[in-house]
Amino acid sequence: MSSHILSGRGEPSPARAWPVLCCMAMLQFFIAVDVTVVNIALPSIGADFGVGGHALTWVVVGYTITGGGLLMLGGRLGDVLGRRRVLVLGTTVFGAASLLAGLAPSFAVLVVARLLQGVGEALALPAAMSVIVLMFPEGPRRSRALSVWAAVAGCGLVLGFVLSGVITELLGWRWIFLLSVPFILVVLVAALLLVPSERSTESVPLDLSGSLLLVAAPLLFVLGVVEAGETDGALPWLPPVALVGAVVAAALFIRAERRSPNPLVPLRLFRNRPRVLANAATVLLSAALSTSFLLFTFYLQDRLGVGPFQAGLLMLPLAVALVVVSVLVPRLLQRWGARVCVLTGIGFTTVAMVFIALAAAFGASGPVMIPAMMLIAAGMGFGIVGLQYVAVTGATESDVGIASGVQRAADQLGGSTGITVYVGIGFAPALGGFDPFLVSSLLAIVGLVVAGLVVRRISLPAEMAREQAG
Image (cartoon, rainbow, N blue to C red; front, side, top):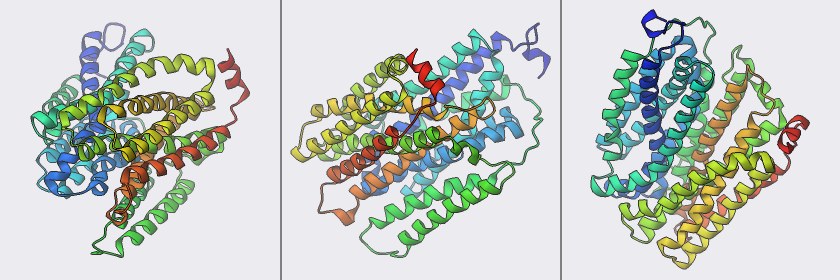
């Protein structure tokens, strides 16, 4: 690191560290916003391009699949190629993909842009967090910096719902992507000017085949499920071929990880039974949570005819409740224990899905959905935080990062899978005789029941039980 970056004691200069944090937080904010900002805009996107709810799932899952699937590779690339270089590359890809999404002339181009946004996220986020860790020495300064980082991520996810409605109503859906481009350019310039370059000492080969297979399997699965719901029969061979391809890609991924000298996901992590069960439950809970967001959007706008701006305001209680719960859960986690918190979150989410099904069946008004939204916020707060706690149980200092990455990938890929299966099947033209909200909700409820049974089988180590009891 060059001397002008450092203070007299050899530590990063605060005068430079805090501007870097602000820029990295800005990047984190817009990446987090892009996870949820499309939700309220989906009906408008569908109307412009003439696509239905089952196909619109691509706009959501394309981003989360590539982001979640390549996340761990992005972290390793930062170690091998240098964090500044990967940060600049990821930010450039994300910004260019955002511009492409906003200008997309067709639905297919929009989906490709969302896939590329996920690639940009996977490259930029791990590098950005590594930069923060390097710029802030261990202790109170680093704790404050990481607290800002986490808070910005939460605000981005929460505000995405509201911003989606406001921007779509006032400017049009394309601006939910275009407005971020100038800010991404600011981050890019700041990364080039303020973030120090470093030489990597890593020479470990990358598990590129494992990374590609980890993305290919869910993408092929989504393609198979979505196309299976089509009724025109233009390509009747595509769904079964895609689904078989997904199974083959998953099997090849496991084989590749077993044989790789430096696997993307070391299989030894899955010898820890609580961790395996926690990640399985994360997939099922995230599937239901992500499904609920789309069901709220489709119900308010497609079923009730509510405009994007009003729909965004109706989603505001969910955002506020999520902030409140995120403050309360860490305290309750120590008092109740992780398993009780997770089961509570699954219970809240299940009740919310029942509420959605009943509201749709009886044609309830928009405000009636607010209790279900608050239950979903409680389910997310209690369930996901508790599962994150269990997922790193028993992890050593050398593999805690990988364990955390696997859990985050399970969260993102689980949400994508849920939207694909639950919403994709529920809204498929082939099931036109059934209420799509009822079908999607019932599928999610089944998954949540399985998640509850999985969590009940988690047996926590004695030392963790003592910690929670204290």
